[in-house]
Length: 195
Image (cartoon, rainbow, N blue to C red; front, side, top):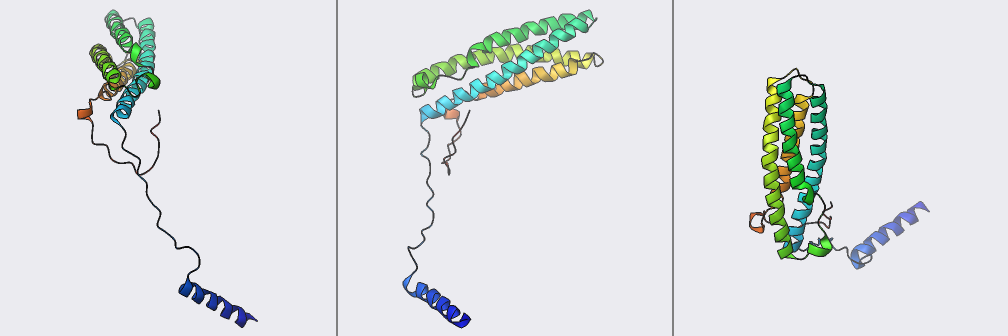
């Protein structure tokens, strides 16, 4: 009985080899997503920049609150005066960034290159002004931390202000012009670019 089963199996395999066993297997086709349009790329720049400004604003609030705490606890008048000055720079930077922390409205400017260019120009100017304010705040924070290593919280504050500066710098860099953009490589998968 076992011999018959083996012969039937061999016959089936040989039969498949001669006449085929179903439809031939075709290699999987790789589909490529179409390259994003200039409007899609422009909107993505604005969305990325707004996201980074939003993160920077959160860090800025943390730094501002940490600065207030040191002002309350320090007895050194020079440190206190410098922290008050730094607070003005941080507040100015926050005001300059306030209008650019929200995700842009895709329905309004998603396909409008002129509107995107106008928003990018306004945002870039605001970012540049904020970076000047933050550079002053960062300089004060770093000098205070170096000159007063024993004053609790100053080193952390300097790090926080540097983080705000770096994040706004990233937001500004996201507002690049099309000519400054790296060539877009064709995507091999349909993975969406999320917020």
